[in-house]
Length: 524
Image 1 (tube, rainbow, N blue to C red):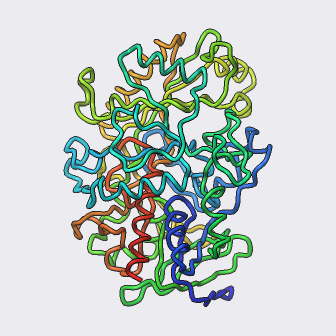
Image 2 (image 1 turned 60 degrees about the horizontal axis):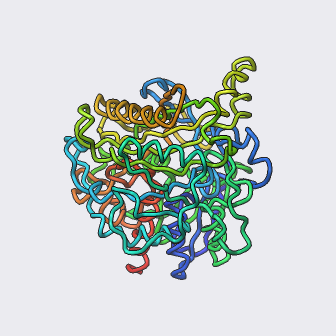
Image 3 (image 1 turned 30 degrees about the vertical axis):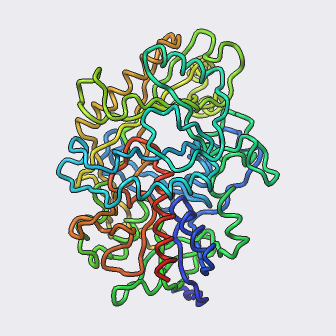
């Protein structure tokens, strides 16, 4: 058995994970003068021309990790499939498309058509989280235009920067939506359009943004904008560190155990507090692997109520391209929220539906890499003339949608295998169909010859598996994201969310993490 490398330095906080939940918590803690160690399973993503290549897309990079595969036991087309996870400094922010939306004010209330008998209840309201949304937007230097979004909740400050000028393709989609009586708006994006300062390059509006690391560092991901200043300020970041267990004695985490990916040497670290922000799948995985559900009065709910949005991509193919011959460039710019809370024209389902967001098609070279050459040539012809709309519908939290561990199967680090079970409800699927129909209408009005819809099967928006709430019998976390039954354990990733609304979760994760970390500082 390998010797354990003990790090006995006096850390105030160990943060597990460097994504939105971990980085934002660390921002507060480090700037308050605390000694913080961050453990990240992955490594830094190199930046340069290679990021523009097909091999730069998420699942083609070494940062799509299959060392600890998750088995999808039930999930529609993904049944019994082994999937990996994204591990790198900055977490999924490195590969996301930069959309930074707040939950709507009504998302914090109880909507029976979504919540049902799940017991999901936010213990806070929008007003309590609003200052932290504002702070997160400033840290991410979000560029947006709040006035045009018909569902935008009230805000105490404008966006940090104005939205970028719409591309020809985006103008065409926005004009088509307006012609149908809708109110398109500019999506708020965490992208530097020339206002980032510090000598950073501005966005060149390429087509390799969403699902790619930014080759020139113009996307305001955490590895570019938040973590480097924290390291300069004293944050200790340990990469390639796989956390395998939390050791608990007398209702406190007394040690964090892990393995170095490169050397396979086990390690142990200690701190007064532990912030767990590994993600909505990896966080319950670690809790269950450490048997910490036994310590929580709502332990039977740890890992349950997995929500992931029910999404679909709808692409329209145009006779001469959607850009009117002006040349394609980045066009994930337009959002449409007219159907967010429901719409008179939609009879099934009644009530909450969701959002539409413009997306650009995958790069031609990526398609050529993934499909047979004759098919690729045909698809390439259509891709060059396409644009799309992403439908994001909120899915219902169900106890049966869950993660659990199989202790008979372990990875090379000793972690038991995580089993994912998730099925969409009839209502979930009906909401997605309703949004796809609207997406097709808009694309056809914009001049598309035909449309193609494709469901998204990833767990990129996973949330809710260790939810917060006021009821100690049904919510593993309290209103400050503290893990009930273990007094020095705080969880600040998407697993803490009670419901997911129908917007990208990154900004809500950030706001919750800033709020929870500020509470840690206040408690001393």
